[in-house]
Image 1 (cartoon, rainbow, N blue to C red):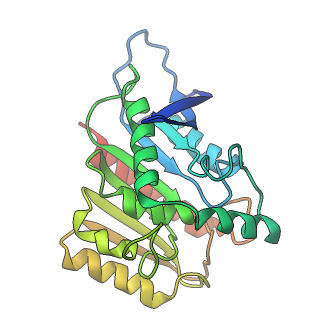
Image 2: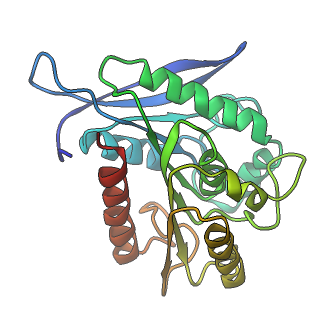
Length: 253
């Protein structure tokens, strides 16, 4: 997969039935008039919305040669929501998180992937999924979609003991996961007990889901985000390298 190529970005509208939501789209550009189609990757936000960090990740994926799209998963609760990382932002983001529902989230993600995969630049077939924080939890859920062949779930809290809307905790859907799942966790994450990471790994093993779980010492929640105090560049760089390997090995024809 190419690296450091130019990208084009725009906000587009995708449709989940009658509901329409915005999504941030990043496309790799190519000097050739008829470049080979490339895989799509959906990027799932933290509780802070499709903010600068999520847009940056989307663009980074496009610079690697993927068609990347980040749907605004809080559009039902708070159209246009985008926040920073203050205590007030965290409180508000969590307020919107508990209003989300798994069925709506899955539909919105499928709508974003459908939009991306209908573009002439995009190759048909399995797509990638990457999510952080709230989006890491949602990514575990989205890994059950037939469109998703490879998932990178970063520090998704609550997978073992909470649900997105009514129903069983999200870990109950493990048997429905398609493709390969990589999970990235900090060993000093005050939101995700080490026992919960072990439980996730055990569930993936029990259900024979191809997976790898990575635990980073001296890293806490949000270690991948270079805009947060919890950023840990060494862990972030290693996790990004492993994510690139996952997508390169899984999404190529």
